[in-house]
Structure formats: C-alpha cells, structure tokens
Length: 437
Ligand code: B12
Ligand code: SF4
Image 1 (cartoon, rainbow, N blue to C red):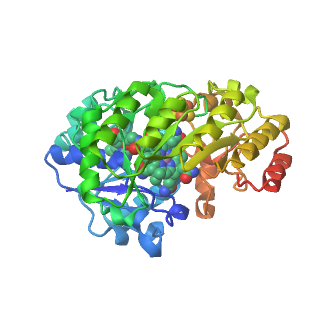
Image 2: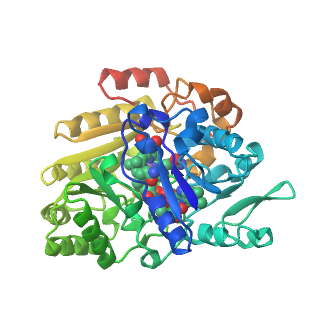
C-alpha cells in the first residue's frame, strides 16, 4: 500500500479547489503496477483546517510503508515540517517528495532534510511505478530516471526523465479515489501537458522543455463522459496551460463535445494571441463559460522584456470581446518585475481598470522568483527575504517557517523578492485603486 498526500498551503484550506490531477494520474499508474494506493488530500481537511505539522501524523492515520508528498513551492515549508513529524512518529515509513515544489533544489532538500528518503523529478507515472517494483533493490536505483536517493550516506541525483509524449498510453486518472463533493464546483481535466511558449517568469516545470503533449480528443471525450455520468452537477475545469494553443484540436474538442450533448459548463486558460472571434463563438456554443487570460502587464516594454509575445493593443481588442461570449473572463497581471518602472505599473493599472469596466475579473500578483524560470536565473544573486514583501502566490501565515525560509534561499526562493524601483509607491498605488496585490 502507498499513501499519496496532496499538500496545500494551510491558509488556502478554506478553498478546496479541484482534486490534484497529477496525483490522480500517478495513483492510476501505481495501481496499474500492482500496488494499492490511498489518497490523503489536505485540501479536504474540512472545517478543522490543515492540521499543524505536529498533528499531521494523527490526521493521516496509519501510514503506508511509503508515503509520497506532492507539493508546490508555496506549501513546501509546511510539507517538510509535516514529513519531519511523520518520520518521528513512524520511523520505518519511507518518505518520498514529488511535484513542482522541490524540483529546483532536489539535492539541497535531500542534504538539509535527512528524513526525506527520496525525491522525484518530473513526470513520475513510469519512474515511480518502476521505483516501487525495485524498492528493495538499491543497486537498481541508479537506473531510475528522476530519482534522488542516498548511497552510503551521500545524495545521488539521477538525470530527469524525458517528457511523456503518449498521454493516451497512461491509464485514466484514478477519479474513483476522490469524493468530488468535497471540492469546489469544478472537476479538473487535463487534455494536454506543457506549453510551447517561453515567458521568462514562468516555470510550469513540466512545460520547461516547451513540449506540448496531448491526449487524443476521443480519449478526452471518454473521460468527460465518465465524469459527466458520475458528477452531472459539476462544471469542468480544463487544467491545460493554454487549451487553444492548437486551434484545430480545440475546435475538434468543441465539435465532439457538442455532438455528445453534455450539459456541463466548462472553463479554460488561454492567451490573447491564441484565440479569435470564430474560436470564441465555437467555445461558447460548446458551453465554455469561463476563460482565464495571462495578461501580465499593460506596458509593452514589460511584455517584451518577459517574452510574453503579446501587445497591449491585442489585449485591448480581445479581452473585452471575450466578455461578449463568456460569463466569466479573468485577466491575470503580474507587478514587481525587477526592471519595472513606476510608469510600467501605471500602464498595468490603467489597463486593469479599463478591462474591469467590461466586467472582467482582475487578478494582480506580485512577481515571485520561481527558481526554474529564466528570469530567476538572471536575478538570483539579488534575492531578499522580507516576510512583509511576499507574492500572493506564496503568502499566508508563514510566521512559523520564517527562520527555515530565511536560512535556505535555494529551497524557498519563491518566498523571496528582488528589490525594484519605487516599491512602496507602487504598493500604495495598487491599494489606492482597490486591487489586492
Ligand atoms: C491544476 C493546477 C492547480 C489546481 C490543482 C492543484 C494540484 N494539487 O494539482 C489548483 C486550482 C488547486 C491549483 C492551485 C494553485 N496553484 Co496551480 N496549477 C495547476 C496546473 C495548471 C496543472 C497542474 C497539473 O495537473 N499538472 C500536470 C501534472 C501531470 O503534473 P504535476 O501535478 O506536476 O504531477 C506530476 C509530477 O510532478 C509528479 N508528482 C507530483 N506529485 C508527486 C508526488 C510524488 C510522491 C511523486 C513521486 C511524484 C509526484 O508526478 C505527476 C504525474 O506526472 C499547474 C501548471 C502546470 N503546468 O503544471 C499549476 C501550478 C502547479 N500552480 C501553481 C500555483 C502557483 C498555484 C497556487 C499557489 C496559485 C495561487 N496563487 O493560489 C495555488 C496553490 C493552492 C494551494 N492549495 O496551496 C504553479 C506552481 C509553481 C510552483 N513552483 O509552485 C503552477 C506550476 C503554475 C505556474 N506555471 O506557475 N493549481
Ligand atoms: S505563462 Fe503561460 S503561456 Fe507563458 S510559458 Fe507559462 S504556461 Fe506558457
């Protein structure tokens, strides 16, 4: 038996979000390899909230011999503390870490935290299943791609696996392991993995190789049919980085969706250069209700500097237009890039204000230095840790972890920031306009 734990940052527990797509894929592969699996999702900790790390072992109950933690960067401090407490309570348990949180600092994590037995890099459906088969044969570990382990006390980090190209060959995610009624209104479904763009602030770690791997539309429709049968009252959230990147494929999905006559409403993430009016019409006809656009900035200078590949003119054309077709349009912005001048932020806020007059929902995030992103590499020598200056990507009640974070910039980089011009003035401007950032 394997236990897979989906970690969430404690302060986000009031929003259970969607079941973790990556862990459902992983669980299905583990089962296919012949191992029983239990999913313990901290997002469903309920009204009691996420347990304090010392209460985590009790919350988890009897641990399986192998407990795998899935974490993003924002929940890494909590996950490490919870794992430490679990190891103290159940020393024979093997603790495995995976997910995007540990990816940039695998060796540092193994060096600093001896209670972590293994860390996996990258997509792990094949490699983790292989590890479970070879667990009792340490001589075989050096051949398992993506695995970090200890040999005679020293940490070994194997090369990462290459991207999985044939997604249809993976078993259907283990949807049956979760009770969807404990989550938000949305069911998550992945039709593709990765992204061919190269925005310099982004580290969608699977996307970094810029390879887009896709499920066939037939397979996606099969999964929708399954979910629709079991949870007819939910909505569908496609978790692809940019669903419309292959327009022909997106159109095929819409046509097959319409032909199947599902009454699910659904939502996607897209780019303003990845959508046009005919595509909007088709999406909306096929019951797509919500579109999330990564806009990032109102300043063309900034858009260029972060290699976004779009212009403020195109944003002004496409986003208001999207409101003609979709009930919910979200525009997400980032402020506080290290090279951002006050005038750049003014342009961002003006654009955000303009879009909000169309009923577009605005999100504004302080740039967070994501360690696998190209922009991070450029500024990693200038990282500063100040708990009062944190992006809402990672913020929350981290007081308990401050000394841990401050001592380990390589592991907790997204909690840091890089000083940039006129910071206080910018913050006041943002507050003055009523945006949270
Ligand atoms: C769906 C999604 C969500 C969902 C579900 C989250 C979840 N637990 O999966 C929701 C809506 C809840 C969510 C929330 C957030 N998200 Co989100 N999300 C995504 C998204 C779009 C897809 C994730 C996915 O399914 N990937 C595909 C699967 C196959 O990959 P995977 O999850 O990494 O899992 C594979 C491997 O990592 C590995 N693996 C994973 N876990 C484990 C565990 C073990 C033991 C092993 C061996 C292997 C292993 O095997 C899996 C199968 O191959 C990604 C973007 C992306 N491209 O990944 C962002 C992304 C993961 N999210 C991100 C962020 C920042 C957030 C938020 C912090 C945003 C916010 N400001 O609130 C919140 C955090 C919520 C919280 N509770 O704390 C960032 C994370 C960056 C980072 N380094 O941490 C990403 C990468 C987006 C980005 N480009 O910046 N998110
Ligand atoms: S920000 Fe979006 S479009 Fe840009 S590389 Fe990341 S996932 Fe792709």
